[in-house]
Each structure stands twice: as structure tokens, then as C-alpha cells.
Image (tube, rainbow, N blue to C red; front, side, top):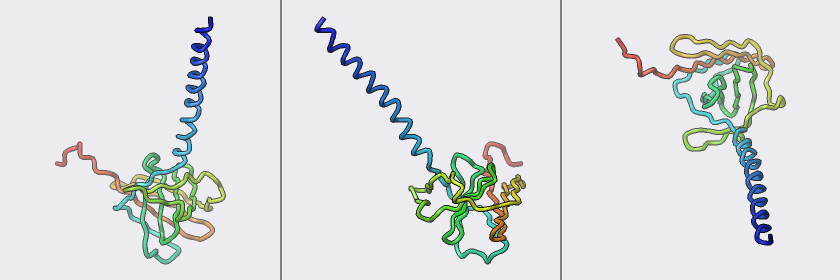
Length: 156
């Protein structure tokens, strides 16, 4: 019987270790899930009314949720979520380069929300258009994202 005690002890330790790993690994993945990977869209078109044009601007698209777009205007970063019809402002410190893509925290709090109205999202042929008005600033944003080329269909 003495020989069976270490065996039971080692099985108990192995079960505890397996449960600990099963709990810790998903928690570590949840922290990574709070990050958004942004891909630059080089052919995007940005139209702004209600303010002077920015000196520098870029448009990025979420790699997972294509309806989410980040617009960089000078040193201001706005996330346009066309699905939830929300605009969030993030700081430059939250927008970090990681190789060819960029990462930012997922803006789920309302403290970073920018009041907006007049949402319109539609397919306009060669591109998808997202339009929104920032109500407090009386600025209208119009972002056109080109559709990727479909190389499977032959051109006649």
C-alpha cells in the first residue's frame, strides 16, 4: 500500500497542474484579444468637410473586423466602427507599430467616445464608403476603402 501513495500523489499533482494551465492559458489569450491589428490602406480616399485639410493623414483597417477603420489626421486618431456606429478617439501612445502592421488597445469604454450622427455605409462599386458626422465639432468624414481585386474572374 505504501507504493500506491506516491502514485496517487503524483496523479493529483498532475491533475492540479493541468487545471491550472487550462485556466491560465485562456486568460493570457484574453489580454492579447484586447489588441486590434491595423493594416494600412494605401489607396483609401479621405474627404473632410468643416475643417482645413490635415497635413498628414492615413487610413487603416482592422484585420479581423473590416467594418472598423482608424483614421489618422495629423496627431489625432479616430476609430470609426460602422457596425456599432461609434467613433472613438485614441492617443498616439496607444497606436504602436509592430512590423508592417500597427496595434492599438480595443476602445470599449465610453470615455473615449466622440459624439457622432449621420452614419452611412454602402458599397459604391469599386469601393466601400463610410460617412459620419462628428456632432460637437461639426466635421464630416467620408472614407472610401477600395475593394481588393478579384483575380479569380477573367477580364474580357
